[in-house]
Length: 278
Image 1 (cartoon, rainbow, N blue to C red):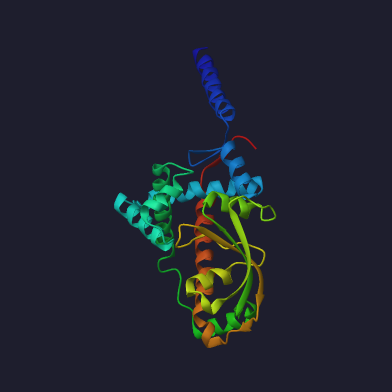
Image 2: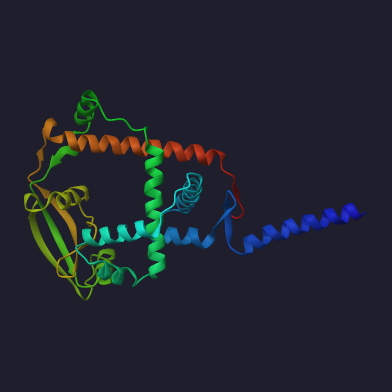
């Protein structure tokens, strides 16, 4: 009788535990780590994706955290400070100006944690890719060039709409609703010659599809700018020799994505994933 009572109590305790997690909004567990309904719904809203896509992204994020722990990847405060200084320099801002901007939407500790996670992820990707991605042969480069020539048409000019504001938040609102006029944001129709831009900025323009915005860039006068790409003008095909560095980049990017996907698919197949609530 005591065994029966003990068994019933244990069953009730288990049921209460699971029921409590459902009530608390836990949708599933990945190797013991909880993923909540709020996380799923919030990611869906942020990225405008389906529930399953959000679930997959969150599962992969938990698995990535496990891998960071398994590889014992740690990032100290000095590396975080170095990274923040470099980000500020790339945006033509002082470190103090950058931190003033980012702490409008989050605390300094949250931002530093975000940077630390990015550095850990970068190190993890390097560990996974180490010795797994080879340099392409001449034949492989030529084969890719022949099959993907449309990727190597380079415009001489681009017709754009320049969005400028002294306030980053106002600019983000304008980008989210480009047909609306947002106070504090100026718009200018321009035709820009790519040869007039530095190579890094020119690459950003070329990598941005028509009818999409470039990433937000900081200007020298503490303002912010983003360009809506409207049309590419005077496109010419790069010859094979000119295109070689770009071809190498594209092939390596494809290989890296394949290696990383295979790595995490293998880990996910053996992970302990328990669904508590659909």
